[in-house]
Image 1 (cartoon, rainbow, N blue to C red):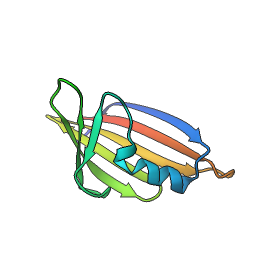
Image 2: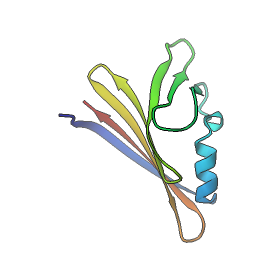
Image 3: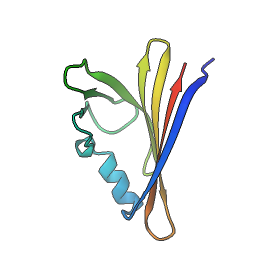
Length: 108
């Protein structure tokens, strides 16, 4: 049985519409977190594999576990005896803005 070993949640709000925020974020070419370089090996759909490359390190491999356009997606990295998931949620606010929430969960 999997247990949650650790979790962290962070949320931000943007003036972008939910549709714009979703379309922008699901295009991995827009992911900007230097010095990391992100690659996706196909469309942004469940099962597609990707990698994160950092200078001087072996690539980190991950896959898209779940996608519920335009509201949610989960990306997961598997390790020996553990899984790290990044759960993203996009919620439209009444003023046309968007709340983006990322929940990071380590399961073992």
